[in-house]
Image (tube, rainbow, N blue to C red; front, side):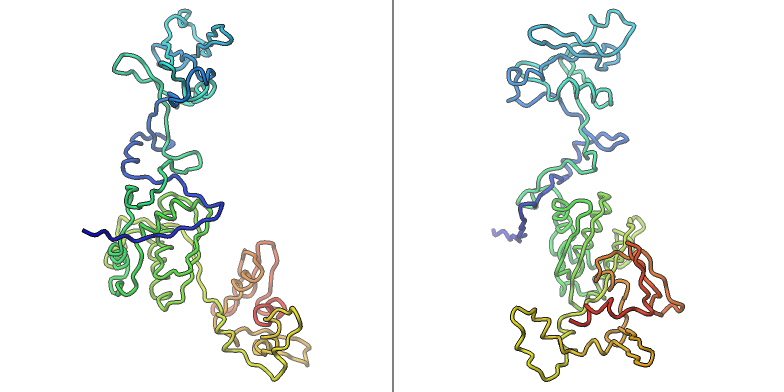
Length: 401
C-alpha cells in the first residue's frame, strides 16, 4: 500500500497567529444547549489538579445554596483562622442559615474562580447546581461556543488536515464544485483547488477586517472560499485577486457573481435552498509594464548617461512622448485639455484617481449621457474633481515619469 500526500507550505512572521477555531462535528455535539446568546455546554467549576487549597487559599470556600430554589445565596470561608458566613441574599426565612446547602470543593481541590466571579456569574444566570447520582450537588457554568466577540472556541489546527474532523476536499471535489457552477467548462484543464481546503486555511488564519491576497487567482477558489466563510460566520473579510489568464473574464468573475447570489449550485443553476450574501466587488485591468514599453518611443539622446544616483525611471522614460498623445494643447485659448481615451479605451477615471491619491470615492456624479465620462468625483475628504475638464497635472504621475 502507498499513501499519497499533498503539502501546504505555511509561512508567517513574528505576528503570525493561528486561531483556535476548528469546530469538528464532535466538538459541535458538545454544545447541544441553546439560549438567546447561542449554543453552550455545562462545565464543572473545579480547578486544575495542580491548583490546591494550600497554593490557592482564596479559591477555597463553601457555596451556600438555597434548598428550594437551588440558587446561590452566599459563601462560607475562613480569614486568618476566623470563619466568615457571608449571606448575600435578603430573605424572610430566619432559618435559612441552618437549612442552606453547603458545597465545598472535595479533597485538596479548589474552585476554578473566585467568590466575586462566582457571584457575578450566578447573578447573570450562568451557573446551575446539578444533583449528582450520590445525592450531592455540584456547580456548573455555561460555556458558550462563541466568545463575546463572536469568535468560536474551537481546537487548534492539526498538521494532518484530515485529522481535524472537518472537510478539506480533494482535487476531484474541486472539479465537481466548479462543474456545478459551469457544466460546459472543461474543469480538468483548469485544475482548481477545493473550496473547503482554502476555507479551512482562511478560517484559522484570518479574522474580521482582514484582507486575503491571492497573486495567482486561477479560477477564483480563494474568493469562493472567502465568501462562503463570511456567509457562515458573519465576519467581514476582503480579498484581492490577481490573474493574467484569459479565463479572468470567462470564469473567475462569473464565478464570484454566482457565489454571491447563492452558495448552492447544480448544473449551472442556483438551488432554491441556497443562500446569498450582501457583497460588493470591483475589478479592473491595470496598465502592464509591457504596455508601457510597447508605447515607448525615444529620441536620439545620451539616454544611458544619467546623473549619478538618478532614478532609472527618470531617464529611461524621460523622452517618451506618451504624455503628448493624451494632451490637446490650444495656444490660442491658452489651455491644455486631457483626453485619456487616446491612450486606452474605457479608462475608469474615478477609480484611477482613487488609486493614485489613496482616497476612497464618496460620490460619482454622472455625465449628461449614460455612456459619457462621469462629470465629477468626490472623495471621502470632501475634495471634488471635475472629470470633464480634468487638470492634466492631477494625473501626470500615471502617464509621464
